[in-house]
Length: 92
Image 1: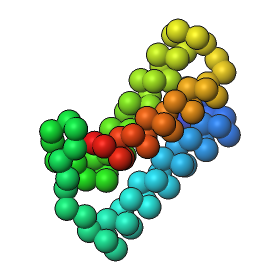
Image 2 (image 1 turned 180 degrees about the horizontal axis):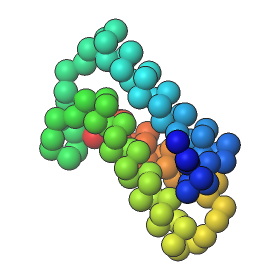
Image 3 (image 1 turned 90 degrees about the vertical axis):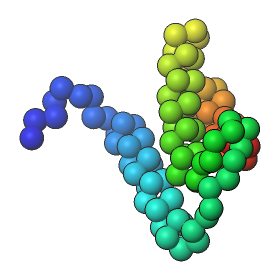
């Protein structure tokens, strides 16, 4: 399979590996300790997997907005993304 069309750097591989690890850990967590969906500030029932998806999607938009407004590096955007993800898991 020719993957030369994408810039597979070690940073890209690490990023996707960490997302895969998060999905595996969330799956194991949900099997070991099933949780009932809860209703947060959005008014919809969400599970921890839903909140992970919402935080990943929101973090992508935060990083894209950061690149458009400020540019690189993205270290401070990463801090904003972590705070956003913590807020999502706490209140959504």
